[in-house]
Image 1 (cartoon, one colour):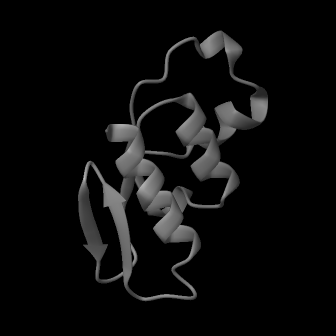
Image 2 (cartoon, one colour; image 1 turned 90 degrees about the vertical axis):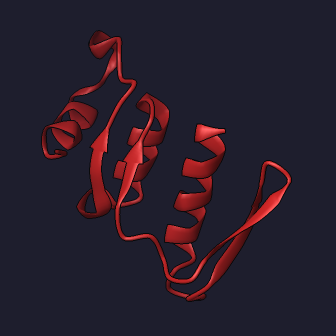
Image 3 (cartoon, helix red, strand yellow; image 1 turned 45 degrees about the horizontal axis):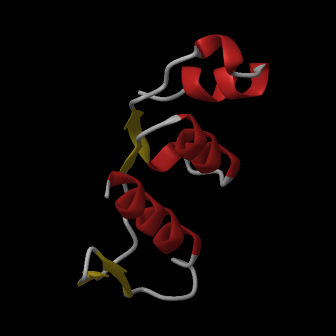
Length: 84
């Protein structure tokens, strides 16, 4: 469920320039965002990397679930250093 919600947030970030209001279906219910989310937390390496690549670190308030630091490349490590 966490991944679905974070994915929904990412989708709404990416289309925020086109639509002010976004509705996504999550766990058999519709969730409507009146405005694009301004702050988000990522929950694993893949989502954190995706948000960094999408240029969203200024909207990120933190991250969690990142283990296996030895597998992160230098670019990913630099992006993470800038996050709260």
